[in-house]
Length: 544
Image (cartoon, rainbow, N blue to C red; front, side, top):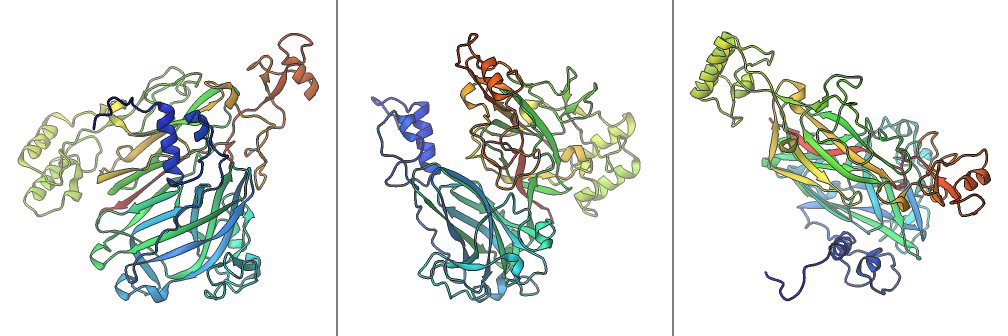
């Protein structure tokens, strides 16, 4: 409706509303960062306690709660801890898997207090029992018996609290728990979120299946920017999938193969990195998302295998829309292109159409074969083969199959996200189809732009403000050993000298001014928000 005579919201006001919604839209209190955006005098922000998620009605689903823990003021932690769950008495038979030891769900809802950067929930699949000493001691977290030692399989002992191990600092739970787990060999994905509140609803006929009892591994990365301790809680709801919707399982995209590919981004410079991801044949993509940290300024995912065409970087993933600011051109002057096949009845997609393939297309028209036998004959990709499409195949037999065409980068752009801690979760309804035999027809190119202080020099990574990772790993994030550029005096200039005093002096605006400070670091991959990540995320299923 018209807002006249009121003016439209400014960009800062829109951002303030976004942050308020992201924090759970609290009725009272101050959301961190909104006072500056609104140019208002507000009370200091305090940790916000979100309204707990109501459990599903009995017989329709189950709720699992995360053991709560407290985050100190002005702190950031990535932690790992475990708890035991058993919902066997809440799952009717029709929602169980064939062996009765699992349940199937079609919808998952997560809500957590707005302190979290991410929550990754995994299931332990190894051999260790719940009372194995390798887990560490268990105690009640929350409730009237808070801090009391407990048996993890006694689900009533802690009352309103939850029996859990103590959260310990751990990157992705590496080195935590029994040996098979800390080596990364005994965990499977369960659920997770990067937001305060998330809902994951699968397409009709798609479900996920998980055990009705077992050990849950909680990997929580959170930060508290306020002056008071903050309690972090989380609730997970699962709505059962009825038998008619238990057709094909949901599968996840969580591509960490090039998680630290941006390393390094020099101080006061930018870099855009790209990678490829290929879906399996007959995949149906119904969701795309992304994960990065605070110096990621733009994420783009394209349909197609955009690669350097020639030159020293031939075949490498590249940005088809070019490179911005000071980001180096990966292709070093060579074109960045992707190609799309033109369908014409080439069943094995080898570049030629044979009479035998034409016969197969005719059998599809007559209903004697399924379209899966020759996907390329379905030129319009509508699940059928028509007479016109048969004629296209005849032309291909007589005159040769049509050559692939160059993909248009703008038309190929599927996904854009600009806010690292509130990434777009993009649904596709109907899901996108990927049936071709050729891998490049089922490949995405995903790119992220990292800005280490180029557009805003005050945002450059600094040695003095970069936290040490919770579990130090050589070469992975944290403060740089030696800062390389000036953050005061000759801002952006390269430092020189054999010690910090000399390096600071080299940054002076004029000789002897004493106003120089050498503190800027290259941006590298790592686990805190001062360092970076590059992870493609999404969900799909295989068409039955």
